[in-house]
Length: 415
Image (spheres, rainbow, N blue to C red):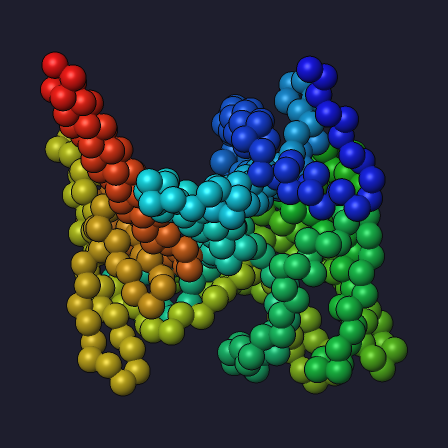
């Protein structure tokens, strides 16, 4: 018997779309595409590093990349997760006929939807920062690994800084290397002109032979040479040509800002490019984006142990005090596999420094600080899914036992 023709009239489109998005074939196809995206994303980490590969393959809506000489044109991980979420919601929760025998599967599918929803929340709202402290130091701020911002700081005569005026990461990242961006504000008596921004750059003296092939103007005997993005994005050191144009029409001040002038030792303060407008001294620098914590962390002791005869660390952990207004100070131990979770933040013992430290040298402890509203969702989703499978197993076992008992009773009655 021939298949009934599909009704493509506009009035039937909602039903066609519903049938499409509840189709088991669609779910199978999406899972196959997710397998391909996972494969290409994993292979791409070799060349582009973990963070960039995640951005390209797993956090995107569409992929249009070239791996070697092979074009990779696929739906991105976010789009595939969204389609799978809609498919499971409509097909496994809404469309399916509700029976007590299917209760376990409904519960299990709910757990899977929780896992997908947690992925969306993590991608949209999670932050990934760090904090580095020497013993005795305390801080209530964390710094970003990869996000940089332009800070303009009014300075006093003794070099102390007042409150900084900040151009956020989102502003810098939209400036192309060959673009000029003029930013004005009534808070400052000058305009800030960004004459191109490079996400990874290196200032080189004009006396160096390689400077001849570098485009861009010379400023104080230096040029800014754009570099290929580092494999690990946190290793990128951005740079920019900047110009400060006073509102009174006096001569503009030019400079090169480079993130390499930012001190990575937590005891040192960033070194700004200084300039004067009128009688006021200002500093400008590219600094890592900071986020405030609702509490303060003080490092009391950093324990670092090496394997005998080598520099390889055997163990390192931190003794901290968590300080919060209106609360008693709380001593906490943070170890490599024992993070501190508090107020939605998770502090992991990440690393230490400075590099090349010898036994007896002062060392700092570095914490990876994650804030993820869906941090525990994978655990909850696993529990819900496991509970659903257990219910389904029990229902099937009872059903099978009941059928077997009836079969034995029927056999006994006929014998």
